[in-house]
Each structure stands twice: as structure tokens, then as C-alpha cells.
Amino acid sequence: MPTVFERLLGGELPCAKVYEDELVFAFMDAGQVNDGHVIVATRAPRETLLDCTEDEAAALMRAAHRIARAVQAAFAPAGITVLQANKPAGWQTVPHLHLHVLPRHAGDGVELTWPRKEPGIERLRALAARLQL
Figure (cartoon, rainbow, N blue to C red):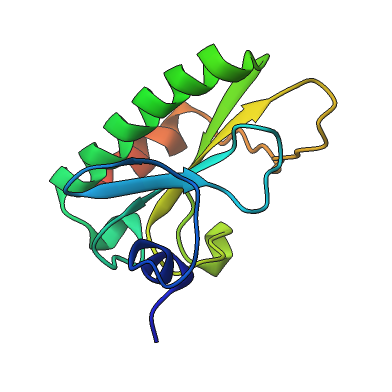
């Protein structure tokens, strides 16, 4: 079953396209949080950031950068949030790799909170040591 983004890309559903290249496409979010809210998605049906290539990940961020600059010029928001979520536990609602370029204004009702933990430098070093880059 194709995702809604695949259906948009394939022309089965209408969208207000903002940008596209060989790896990504971008369109206005139908659920505009604030005017200028854009989704940038991979052309290939990748579910999460962990499923894409480095080139696709870089293309997403290049497009987000370009779009954020255009959003700033066109809508003059007080700020911009770039959000990318993976899997339902990570807040992903469409199983197709994408990110949001979201213009922000004071009091716009958008919330992003989490409980802050401060484990100390030794725990942080132990956690860092577990990563194999």
C-alpha cells in the first residue's frame, strides 16, 4: 500500500509542490500549523532516516536549508523549527521519511517538551563510548 507521500508524488493526490530534485520533493503541508509549513520527503519510499542513504539524508537537509531561507523571506516568522521523526514512538505519523520546515511565532500553540535528565559527565562519557562511528 503506497503512503500518502507516494500518492502525492505520483500525482494520484493533489499537492502544492514547492521543490523537487532527483532525491527529494517538498510540498505545503495540508495541515498548515503556520503559513509556510513545508514537508520535505524522499522520493524513494524510505520509512525512516535509518533506511535512507547518506546522499538522501544530505539531500533532505540541503532542501530544508533552501526552503527555510525561502520561508524566512516570504513569511518573516520569528523562528523556524525543522523536525524529523522516526517510528511512532518518535512521533512519526506517516511511514515515509520526511521532515517539516515549520515557521514559528510566539504563542502559536506548538509544543515540544521532554523531561530533562542530567546524568553527569561520567555517564555521558559511558554513553558516548557505546557509539561506534
